Image (cartoon, rainbow, N blue to C red; front, side):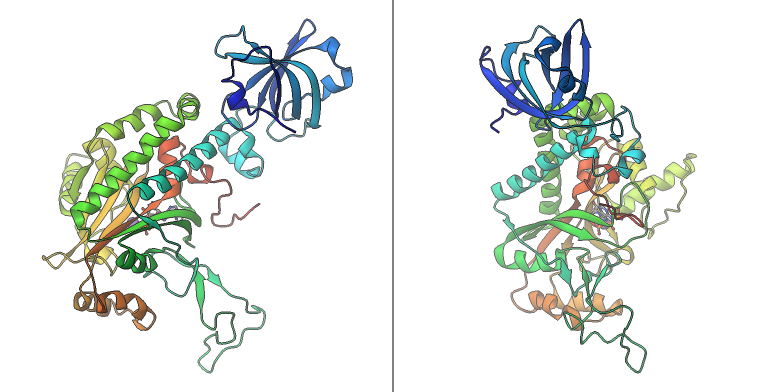
Length: 464
Ligand code: ATP
Ligand code: MN
């Protein structure tokens, strides 16, 4: 079954050689006893043209060459007379490996994103999803390469956990208990002592707390894995199962952290421009005409570094000048995505790293500023997306951290292992979380997060 991949066949110039290609028929047309097949094998957005003469093939075979059918073609590589392609294949032998009749759900061009989600098991065969999925792979490679080259260690944090990262999101419980026959104690509480782990556990909402253990031992680590949040927010930017990248660095202060956030995102965007050119050009043509411009724009600009308090002032001024927002934005409010996008897309017209948030809207582990009311968060806000990174300097002082934990009335019983990092050899450190799919949204220009992951999981949807 030796074959030449289409991506390689299109680069070959040894015209006259025999070649075998395999792939799926994108389209077939014919005239005057000659047929032309556009064949795609997923290695590239580009198709290779197969040319054949009807008289050289039996009629039955030619009839089976329909859109979506899978073929093995043996022939001669020839220089193509057609514009936009160097080579094509003059077919000598065609075998239909898999037929495809007219019930094929991707028969018609221009199907809606919503329709394609209902056939998510087949949509990788479309041009757009092929492009998105190749870019997704490339972004994963960019991320591992970046961290590896910068001396970070890939650190594996657990997916099943008894810690809840302080309500970063609602959790999916994991149990082997018989849900039809739950034993309860005298107070009506479920008894987990006979559950698989002997306690209540769930799928992780963030690997950060465990990541901090890695950073305070290895210096610099990153995680890259699935993350689960049972949030009932049906938005174009939230999934119940998504992938998160969480670097955590010892001896980083706020400045170091912001520099890393900016450098890292720019590296990923540059990687896409350098390695995914054909797919980006396709998406720029078919999905979002400003995509390439926006990607190149991000590389040129320095990200604005904006304290939350100044951000609120800008938003208040905008309201005075007649701007209407759906949600309030007084000092102390968590910014809604409309506010984030106003700052990024209309006010500054470039990415913003927002810093120093009120402590009431941020997590317990963030480092408190001397003003006693703001914390050293450093979220990155992006055009089209809103929050793409959530980051912060961590509170390394045991007493201050405990004071915040007590102020919030949190139980420390299940956090002792985390507090140990501050008990013994505590060190200044910082980190952030990047939502992988939000990065893919930005890099592809796609509008809905359901369309940048092969199998999206959202409320009431867990197909395939
Ligand atoms: P948001 O406010 O957008 O819901 P968050 O503040 O809850 O996000 P964090 O806990 O800071 O998110 O998580 C870090 C990053 O993970 C976010 O900046 C975002 O890129 C990504 N992220 C968070 N929740 C989701 C989700 N449900 N689906 C996809 N990505 C997510
Ligand atoms: Mn956040």
